[in-house]
Length: 456
Image (cartoon, rainbow, N blue to C red; front, side, top):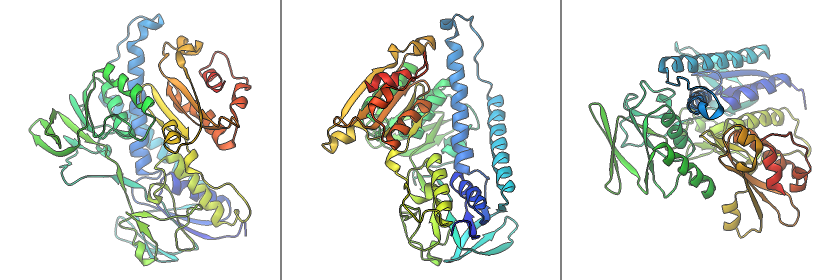
């Protein structure tokens, strides 16, 4: 019954685990949260947040270099690397403190250590000093996240050969960074370090970056990279890395090699489930990901999973929403009809310059399915606000149903795309039509006006 006191034990204090903990506590549950690294999540606070902080610094540098175009005298925009490091540390500490305070205020018990299942209703926590604490639970939530994937041929040393965990920020600013992996994380690194002044080479295993995104969006980003002087090595798959003093050499499967000062791997992640002892509770997994249903419930009653370890979209926003849904479901609030999570309607963003964001049905996917759609596209160059900002790059593309006008998806390339996509995300989730967008009275001048123009 709603409000009934239940014992929650949550393993992993990332966005999913902490959100679940606070919601469950508000609903009357007794909550224990076990975290071994950093409250708030290592992937979130040591990857996501620092990367966006570094990108923001790079963006500020780019804006300052264009100051004369805005009627300002030239200003010094050199990077203070030590100041950047201190800024990132400060942000991480403030966010971790904020999350810890919120959990404490809700009465959540925090346990520092590693957690593992010892049965379908029991969890064991081992603290850093070796102390073992056993808990009985009515509800167990697995929220242990993921870690960078490291292939056998990559001699990671954290100095010259880096994973994402070594690069926020790296030990030193690379003279020439070789990025292996052209997905979301890889292109953000390319943007970040090219903004700082490093030479950058991106090894692209296919024929364009962002293979899972709209080809038109990928092409726009590639143009920006080329303008920045980034070297794109297309159709090449890295297969070996060697370190020779102050340089690294990446060898590709087609015989080509690239020499630089540092190499960074951004080729995906693996779930942190190997230490959970899933078999002790009979929890099923696939490739290390816990198999869950639409309620994030595993095959075992009372055992849930959220975040990266659930095998769904690896986004902090998705993990947080999963955590809230788990708390509500476990506490009995979902007895009647309710809206389930629809991962196909999750908005995502890439914090390059310009930013890229999308939501819902993609144009290429619709064509592949043989689905009839209406696609409209408007460039930001028609926007007064874009001209005022001296940044008319990019466009808005909206995908809609040609019969009903319902907004099915959209892509945005341009300044503040990560913010603007929220309007389209709401439209997709709520089933709004292009007419609803056209008849909305947006602020003028504002970049959002382009959304209404694209909907016409």
